[in-house]
Image (cartoon, rainbow, N blue to C red; front, side):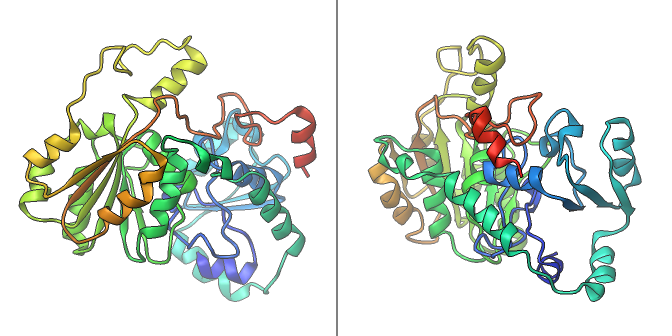
Length: 353
């Protein structure tokens, strides 16, 4: 895929499952797109004149709704080994040219015939969007409490090439997909399209035994309570580093409840009936050598130094404001370019080539 991108000069906007396909500092890497993607990634997709989707079923999380609002000016070529994924668009009003083929065979067949091309004006436009709509703007660093985007960005700085990063579902995976800057050789593991809460820690254990390497797990409090494998990590002294995001419940559900259900947080908040243990005490009781809990932005870098200070298991609990949302985010029924927080109609019109 990287060879194809470099040979063709076509920028790459990966779905969540492909975020680790190329390092973030590659000149052709755009960033994530979709309902919980980046604004600049969505603007690039929506302004494109050609999209080659390889190995992506282009579900509604990628296309937005209605589906026929996706990349309205683009010729869309979809490479997928399952013809039913290609054929489904016949009933959705989206014109797709399908290539039913294994992705590796497609790349091997097409790369030799590509003539090297560059699109400097298009690269400049994408980079301009990145500068004007950063996922972690400077004002996030001035908050007294921990901003999740700052935490994720700082985490990406200290993770090493070759680290395997695992995420649970909810805000944890959305914040990671938007703000984590992947390095060469890193892998991002998640239960794509299934997103079960509680997947993260068992998956992290499995990843270590499969590779023998260091594993970084980012999980939310709601997901973390749905597993019971801390003693396995401690008892076998596994090099698993846990960053636990504690925002007092199921924050992604609460964001949806604010949008659709009048801010009624039954069963998604402490006030709505949820209860949580002391996660640090729970980890210590399971045999962890050390844990740490922080609430202030000034403590983020110190937490990360402690986290990666040695190869022993560690859990760092980060207390977040319960009202921190996934930002930007696409409201249902909106095209990809029109994300919350909304641009003015005049601003949005200027961004559409």
